[in-house]
Picture 1 (cartoon, rainbow, N blue to C red):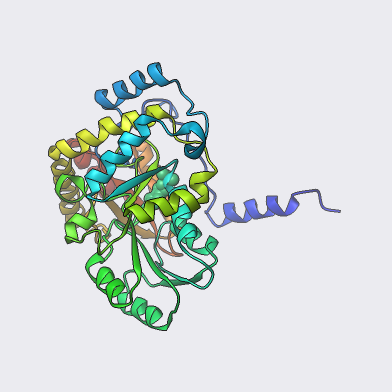
Picture 2 (cartoon, rainbow, N blue to C red; picture 1 turned 90 degrees about the vertical axis):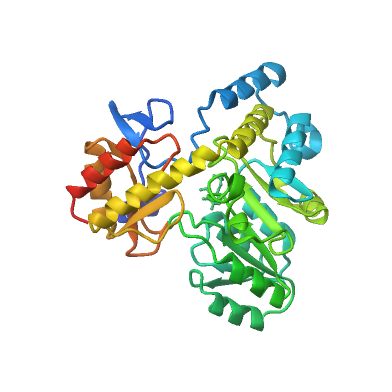
Length: 386
Ligand code: PMP
């Protein structure tokens, strides 16, 4: 008889052979522009703290003061006794920020996406998802039990054909900024199709909020689309906001429906009150500090120009995510290791996170990077073969 779990050990071996094995590296310092790892100081080019708010003194002080006043744990789910006045105030402020009736906090973005999609759809309904959507959106679509159609990335003609053939309630779901590519969803065409086919459109703008558009209002602002065009707007708080958690914003009816039905909202402990307090502070900075968005533009423009001069395989991205397409997984890992040795932390992203043959280096910028950091990275890249 084979020992228990022998097949799992075989699976792990397979992953190693295919260069798909994922290992964690331990960060021994603050998560900032620099990180300490394996005893080395590295320039960090893989954080999603785009605006550099995670270590901002106002955000830290709001967190500390709230811990002193409210303690650490929230004690229970929002619907039992975990929903504090601070959570409530943050929801009001997020509603105001997104120009919607209401907002609802979730403990993570993953949970928000699964909870929203499963709450809104029945088996007789249909969900349409971009092939490159974040795993949580795809998982939500699958878990909903509704008819599940994936369309090729940004292929609105394929989506139109699927919509034409569907019946029941229809939900189109897309990333706003695609997390591993950095490009924007075609929200103008998606919202037109949603109207034409009487479908709802849901946008997960995890990587757009804070970074794109006036006052960081995200890709919806970039396209000039409104609550009528995109009735379901989801955002995460662990990226541009620099804290933790997520929210969905929309109409009174949408939010009340989610409170009644979203299982990942109902059956989980509310985020610590101090996280909500810190997020209220970061929202103020996110709106006010236009310079952070401008700086991100300067840094990514500098990088794109330099990468073009070097003939590096840039992807078409207008965001703070600037991936370099490598293709082979082993080559991507080797490049990431070379950059590590040169003092730069850049993650290699491999299948199944991205499609087979499209492994890449995912480079992300923070408003706290300086031009010298970008130039240093370009120097290091100029010595490798891509
Ligand atoms: N949506 C997108 C597009 C994301 O990139 C992420 C985070 N990787 C999530 C949702 C999940 O958010 P969280 O990390 O808060 O669970």
